[in-house]
Every structure is written in structure tokens, then in C-alpha cells.
Image (cartoon, rainbow, N blue to C red; front, top):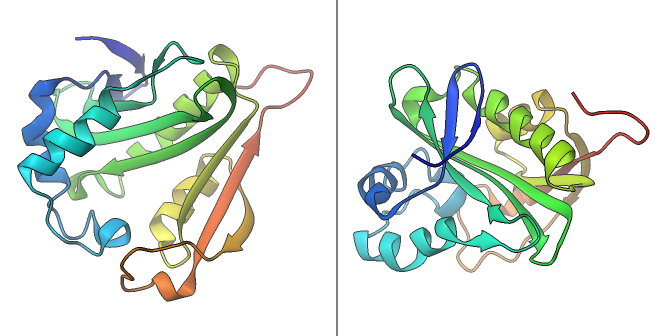
Length: 186
């Protein structure tokens, strides 16, 4: 297993082709996907052809991937995935934070724990200066995670939704955290 990062309760590891079934289950839970695509199902072929190549992509400026499978440290149970990827393939300065966890793990602090660890790793090891995260304005759970992870509200905006989903009429929000200058991030 290619481990990228561990926390007290989570192992973040590189995705492999063998994760298709995990992703299929995660991306077909209507509640998990509610604020992503309105809860519409995702086919196995879409996971293989679109999702998995994105999750397996190495970013030159990081020298590693931008997405990691999250597993419970003690049991190995698949929790979902985390993202910390550069917005520019060749410049690590600005990275986007994201997470998608299975419903059974919601409310357990995993999203905050994994997000904090990735932010710290980005600031200390990957050359990240600014971490940004976006969600629908009505996604209060994700917004709460961003705030607990140390990000601050930056702005509201209207995204370009190819197909409107419930809540998209309220727009989106962006949060950010900047690497502290002159001190180590902890």
C-alpha cells in the first residue's frame, strides 16, 4: 500500500485500479452526491473512464497525486477520499482542498482530521502558500468542516452548473487559508 499520510485515525493512500468498487459505491450514494450532481447515479464505466484517471494523476509540481483514498487506520475500512491538488500543474502555490466521505463516517470528525493533516502537509512539504475550498452555499456540513479545518470564508459566487441541481440557485462559496509567514504551520 502506497501510504501518503496518516493521522490518529486515518490512512491516506494512493488510489489503485482495484478501488473501482469502493468508488462506485461512494459515488452512487444519493446523499453523498447530493451537492455534487444532485444525487444522480454514476456508472462503472464513468468511474473507470473519468473518475479513476483523475484520481491516479500525478501533479508535476507536487511530485505526487492530488487525491488519496481514505481508510480507517484500525480497520482498513474505506471511508472515501481527500483532495489537495494544485490549481496549476506547474505551480504548487495554490491548492484546492476537497473530500468525499461515505455517509457512515459523517459526523465522526474524519473530514476535519484529514483536511487539517493535508493542509499541514501542503504548507510544510509541498510548497503550498494558499489552500482554497469551494462548495454550494447550502452545503452547511461541508462549510462547517472547512471552518473547523481553519479555512475562512472568502466570497460567494455563482458557478456555471451544466445542469442545475437543488440548491444551486443559492450559489457557491469559497473558503481559504494562507500559510502563516515566518512560522511553521502546525
